Amino acid sequence: MLTGLGLSLGKYGYAQKSPNMAGPIQPKTSPIVLSTWNHGIPANQAAWNILKANGKAIDAVEAGVKIPEADPNVSSVGLGGLPDRDGNVTLDACIMDQTGNCGSVSYLQHIKHPISVARKVMDNTPHVMLSGEGALRFALENGFEKENLLTAEAKAKWMEWQKDAKYKPWIYDDSNHDTIGLLALDSFGDLSAACTTSGLAYKMHGRVGDSPIIGAGLFVDGEIGAATATGVGELVMKTLGSFLIVELMRQGRSPQEACEEAILRIAKKEDIKNVQVGYLALDKEGNYGAYALKPGFQYAIMVNGENKLIDSDHLER
Image (cartoon, rainbow, N blue to C red; front, side):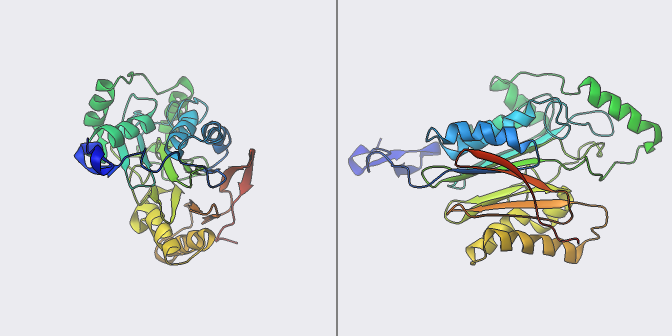
């Protein structure tokens, strides 16, 4: 401990300010939570329960997305997620705080809460991402339980899909893009984000989308803002949409303007006839924005204790 200098050795031995140097930190802003889709409503509530008690944004975002991860009725996240074309449920997730610390897991099987494994990667390792068998081994070594994530309902849907699919991966329809991304601003003005998904239903085995990729599925800069994505991840990865949005906010764009520009970048380069992408953004002052390629994208917002679902504006008219 470097107490004489008011410093302590933080993660991996780097010097950081002692939390006692400046006395108690006082709340300075009203918390806010934003998340994608209608399963964002219960996710927001779990996050809000932490924020209203002056909890940290990083704890709030993890707690929030764990709700749909554990819900077998949510077919695009965690337990109950629709499998790949071989019948395997494979999960992706990442988490990031206001300092740039982040953790991620991809192609993880048998673990219901990939977001908490990603948090462990962030907190307990020098790495950012673990994948596949290595991610599973790490999870089991850290006390996570191995379980079957393919529910009877998801299995029945997969078997029905196989009848006419001819083993071709299913890329898109209105029920096949509902990743949850969640952004939070806490009472101390700190931002964090989390994103978790079971990915595209009936995808090729081994496919990984944007959700575990820092800068694609989400990005946080504590001095500027945060953004997250949902939809067909290949399009988000090609443009690093979440990073783009935060950088546009750094250059003076509002969260709404930044989301719109990120969607336009996709529309200029891709055939968007049968795909959907939606973005959410939140800045340091609590201003937010949302925009999508097509109608249908909804997001949940909770502020001042009110939790509501909103239809996002969109490019296609």
